[in-house]
Image 1 (tube, one colour):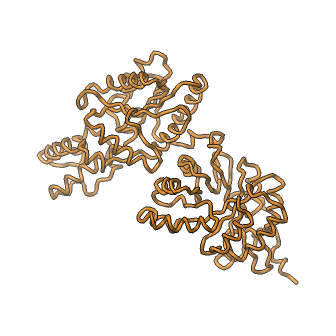
Image 2 (cartoon, rainbow, N blue to C red; image 1 turned 180 degrees about the horizontal axis):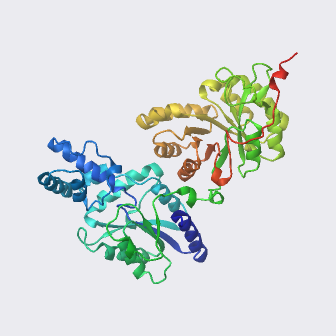
Length: 490
């Protein structure tokens, strides 16, 4: 079976190659394609319980719902609800499901569908159109709800690119979908793909597509029309897998990618075999030998392991410079490392454009950051600010005052964890304030690509991405063995 996201990527690049100067557009249906309608059904039915003091749907989960939103009578029958009650519930459901309040509160997108949309929105001369069977009376509520849901992905839907059914509810939707194609074509777009959960809609689009260049993608969710009527060219899929859509060679060139935790031979080998330019090394002072070494964990919480390899900072720096890589120093022990780090940078005559210093503000403090900034004013000087993110949301003026203080110390990049809530909103706010942003703690390829779509200045990741043949921190075999304990012997 063909992978629909992989086929979509191939088709898009083929269309871009064939029509390099045309405005390309991909169309998405909304309900059942972008929006998982099971959440709306669940919300309305549980609202019925709350309003009427019943408990028919207390234990119902969205995963229990296997019927289209127009076939709720079948769900009620399956739940063995008395016939008289079923009629009351169905009447309530039909009255409430498309009210603006429900649209704003009860809609949830399918996983990663907004990431797919974001990917196309950031491509040159490419747009995303919405082609929905909803009547135009719901235009404002539809646009508002979608843009609120999409904010997390930095997606914004243009009102001009929302085409709605010009007729009333449930009236000739396939015809409306075909008219939607013509609407976008009249705007000057070459429509290259249509994503819809209803086979009947894809059939109508296929019928009016004289060029046969519109790829028809069936979102295999809940749908009413028969799968059998879909054109033979339709490709179906359930998962919006961005790891199949976005390839390594397509990563935005302006984002700096940083390979995290190059503290051992295995990671070093993997990094040097990659196309990543920046290596992050965790710098510490060995409490036994006083050497400056690379190690992620401190010795107090993670004692030395019998088979552990310990690399000195100079060993790693020598190797990285031999391969013309840039270096990010994460100063795990804070101010006590300043003198040694500055001496090492001077020793190797490292250019400011190829070095990066990172540490917590409580470890380096004002004195440490200013010392680094004075000696290397054009290097990247970074600190994590996860402790400030609630303040950025709730008390932005106060948060900006603190960040301006950090900037006066020489800090020119701020780092937030991938796990931080409201990342996109925080990223937008920081950029509006004039700060550069790094996203770190990115655990896997899917999260990495989602972070790429947010377009920060840099991303720090373990790069443990088997699909790309990268095996980052924690992976790799045949490490070089050092008899470290022998260093401590007299």
